[in-house]
Length: 156
Image 1: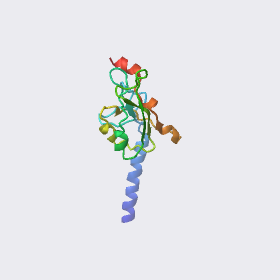
Image 2 (image 1 turned 120 degrees about the vertical axis):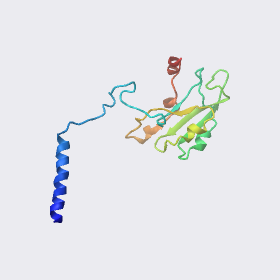
Image 3 (image 1 turned 90 degrees about the vertical axis):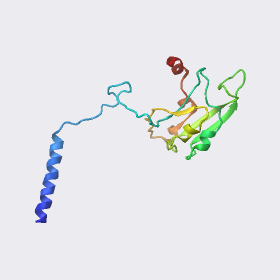
Image 4 (image 1 turned 180 degrees about the vertical axis):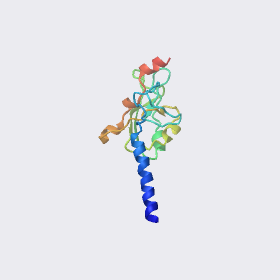
């Protein structure tokens, strides 16, 4: 009796499989789907690639306080500070981050760096296409993460 029951279960499973094989495939049309994000829909709390923000004058918000690097449990943030001069003003503070690197090979997207920043200089953006076949491409530099000045003037 158990052989007949097992055979009936196999036939039932295969009938579902064959029925699904004949149905049309339904896919999400990413990246060319409808909407302003071309098919990608993000939740409010999504933690994507990091973005270094600028203030309303176009200066960098990062003051090289190293709090984000200290809060990072994965130790993936590297910062080198430099002093602002009257001729070369990078940030509104005395110091700025000359080098700001995040190693996405190690980053766990925990958000501690965003919470630790006193000037809201680093935030999580909505960038999610970070995959690479080369591990050296996964180290994002300050130039890669910094909001362009042109985007700041377009927002005004």
